[in-house]
Length: 81
Image 1 (cartoon, rainbow, N blue to C red):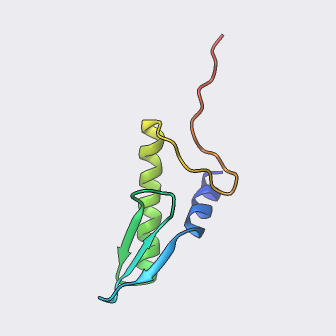
Image 2 (cartoon, rainbow, N blue to C red):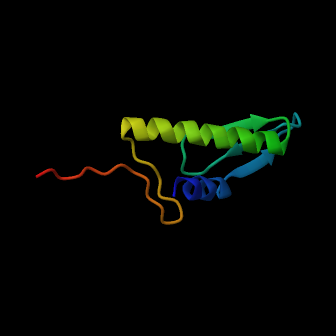
């Protein structure tokens, strides 16, 4: 499920070539997830790593995480008896 979530989020990534010849990428709805690289492949690799680290921090802190393609990876409280 986590792999599908990450792949779904990466499908939403927007890439653009900057005036200096490098590439920039961000994922709409994922505040603070962006990357820059010399090539589009380097940029894609970087944004994948940034997304993974961002998700780890969000899960650790209990912060809300966007639902992607119907996949909800937010941690839910479970009622105890």
